[in-house]
Length: 155
Image (cartoon, one colour):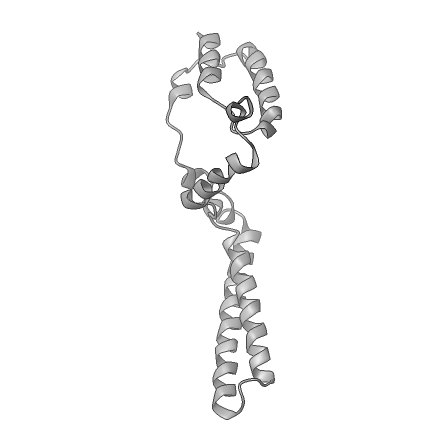
C-alpha cells in the first residue's frame, strides 16, 4: 500500500520548471527511504489529512514574531520609529509652510524623515505575512515566460 501511495504521489505531482531537478532527486531519495522508516504508515489517515491554508502556514507573525522576544521588540521599535518619523515630518512641513518657502531646510528634513518612516514601515512588514494569493498568482504567471514549457520546446 505504501508503494502505491508513493507512485500515486509521483503520478499526480508535476514540477513547474526545469530548475526543480534537485527536487526530483530529493523525491527519488524519499521514495526509496520512506518505506523503510519504522512506523511510517502506522496512521495512514495523516497522509490524506487536509493541509492548513497558505496564510496559516506562511504567517510570519504567528509562526515567529509573536513567540520571539527579539522580533517582537524590534517590531514595536520599528512601529514607534515610523510613527515618530512621520509625525516629525508632518510637523516640519507644517512649520515650513507657515513661515517661509517650502524649498528650505525644513522641506529637505521632512522628506528625509518621511523616507526614514517608510523604511521602518517596510522593515516592519517583513515580520508579517507578505506573500498573499494575488502576489503568488502574479509570480506564477511569469514562470512560462522564464522557463519554457517542455511541450512547446518539442514542436
